[in-house]
Image (cartoon, rainbow, N blue to C red; front, side):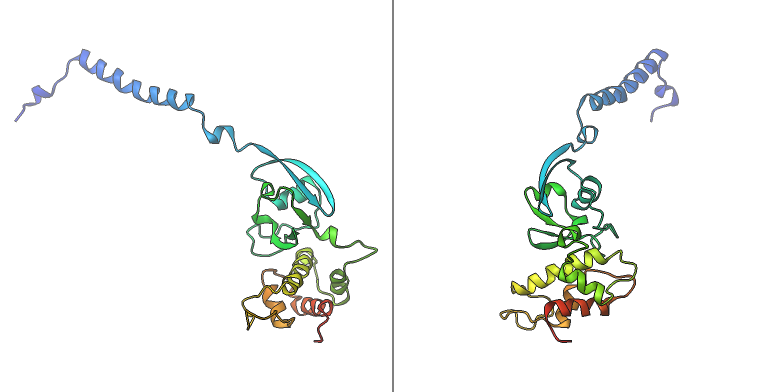
Amino acid sequence: MKTPDEFTISRRGLLKAGAATASVPAIGAAAVAAAPTRAASGPGSSTVTLRVNGKTHRLVLDTRTTLLDALREDLHLTGTKKGCDHGQCGACTVMVDGRRINSCLTLAVMHEGAKVTTIEGLGTPGKLHPMQAAFVKHDGFQCGYCTPGQICSAVGMLDEIAQGIPSHVTADLAATPQRTTVEFRERMSGNICRCGAYSNIVEAITEVAGVKA
């Protein structure tokens, strides 16, 4: 067994060991500083062309920009609302190439050349879309915040039925889905109305669908 004296180190040896140890983090820091990182440079920008409500727009966007933010912040189409920002409330629903989607869950750069329809593109105050007129007639809204997404979703939902796309409540997957309130409620379940105007919303959809309540 070694005695305590055998563990002693000279002053010169101690200085050498300390200098060697101190150089390690300095070398590591220099290597990190010299190496380019993705975080330092950022994701960059990209040019995307969208045809929104019949008009072509060429935008230079941060590649992380959602379609919702591009519509609201860059094109100033604020009819499309930001609700939960997690794809759960449906307030941001728009039509992309004829299909309804949650615009908060998709990046704008993913839709190069796509045709986007927002609530502003469905109708005008002087000439409302039939679904807009039905919502007014049946008082399908209270505060109105979710209404743009509700209307866009309702229009897309009826198109899905017309194309024969089944839902979770479609009894016969091989047959054309029926226009029933059960189908309407299921297909609209992704659009939340905090005011609870659901029955009026269903009445508005039923009228546009040409179904007798």
